[in-house]
Amino acid sequence: MIALDASAEHLLRELAPQVLGVVVRRYRDFAAAEDAVQEALVAAALQWPREGIPGNPRAWLIQVANRRMTDFLRSELARRRREAAVAQEAVAPGVENEEDDTLVLLYMCCHPALTPSSTVALTLRAVGGLTTAEIASAFLVPEATMAQRISRAKQSIKTSGVPFQMPTGQERAERLRSVLHALYLIFNEGYTSSAGPHLHRCELSVEAIRLTRLVHQRLPDDPEVAGLLALMLLTDARRAARSGPDGELIPLTKQDRTRWDQGQIAEGVALISAALSRGSIGAYQLQAAIAAVHDEAPRAEDTDWPQILALYDLLRRMADNPMVMLNHAVAVAMVHGPAAGLELLKALDADGRLAGHHRLDAVRAHLLELAGDHQAAIAHYQIAAGRTTSIPERNYLTTQAARLRECTES
Amino acid sequence: MKYILMMSHRKSQTEGIATWPHKDIQAHIAFMMGLNKDLRASGELVSAEGLAFPDQAVLVRAGKNGEPVTDGVFPETKEFLAGYWIVDVESPEQAYAIAARASAAPGPGGAPLNMAIEVRQVMSGPPEEFV
Image (cartoon, rainbow over all chains, first blue to last red):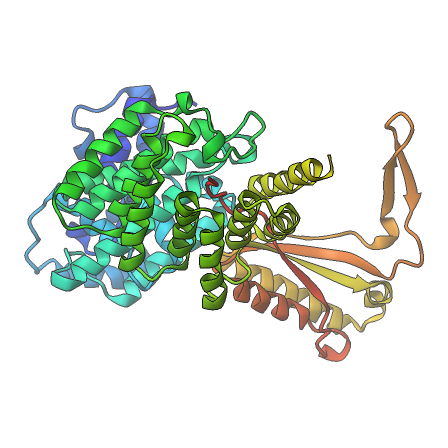
């Protein structure tokens, strides 16, 4: 089979949510329209390499999707749906607005009735234009399982009765938060080791950046959208340096900084600087600002930890999040010494929300090592290794414990 | 998050299934197939496999030159892995609930077997960045 080249693939993915918006507006059945557009995308991927890209690719996709919808509506099984659709055709069709359609679709896919994994899968298919097979392979589950997950997600949306239109007022702000959170989840899932069996998962972070860019283009004045895009770019910029040739994890302080993507860093820094100057500070902006401080240090020892500490102080006041408290403790240790950081971990122990979380033990081990208490550090590296759910991370933590044991013995 | 659910049988149990009444065997098989069907429909099933009876199992070790040296299964081994599921769920509680359902598969006379199902997380989380 001849495959689409990169530019055609890009075009197809860009058009996917626009075409879906048009078809949903016409037929008022999100679940069926989404299936029809998916079929149109698959048809394009098969036909365009052979026959060339049509003069008006958007119209071509709409036409194919419309035909699929017509077939669907004609089918015996869908008789009742057809009656419903015909009845609704009396409703004046909304004004088509491709720009808004992408956002409306995102708001739909990130409906609170859906579980995080359903939200992510549906977003990647309906807005990202990825096929079910591609999404399944990114999450390492069988295609049939992913197909079921997507179909159930669409069913939930249908049951919830959410209309295909832009939410208003307070609801809109809440849904935008869910959208940004879903994009953040997609990014995190992809931001993993770039070697070994998880290689293809990198595409998820690329896709998350692409989708966040789409949102940023449509809401250029929203500082949190800009903040999230900046956070992704500034984090992804380190990807090449983040793991060694065998997929082993390399911590921030040991990374070869010449391998960081300076283009992405420059774009991220510009975005976050502009967002922060607008004065409406949010959690994504602060996290992006922290990532920028790391990225702008030529060497690990040049890192401006007092500034990072100040940013974590702000972040800590903004959200009651134990993970933020943990990172804040690391920053305190880097500025005021490991004892001060370890003192703060006691509050986290009492807090209880991170009880049993490997990250708390990993940080404690690191701070104990800095404080020179190697025996205790070894013990906590080992506890952390036993609790993580990532193999590269477990290897890293086990190696830390072994390294420290050897230097304690010698 | 992914979990593996490992179902172990006591040796007597595995051999015993052949002695169950026909309708009980069928009910057991139907139960397992129904469980798999539901897991597939809910979008949670990653894979599920049943294993051959343990009397066909061998232990393999590398010999001097790395060649496989096989050994029969030792009769004193009491528990055998009979099959497993890998499920992709939102929380450990969901994995436990599926395991409990599998554990209660019907045995002779339709009574629940209440088999022990070992549940362990599959290492599939993304690593975080360490300073």
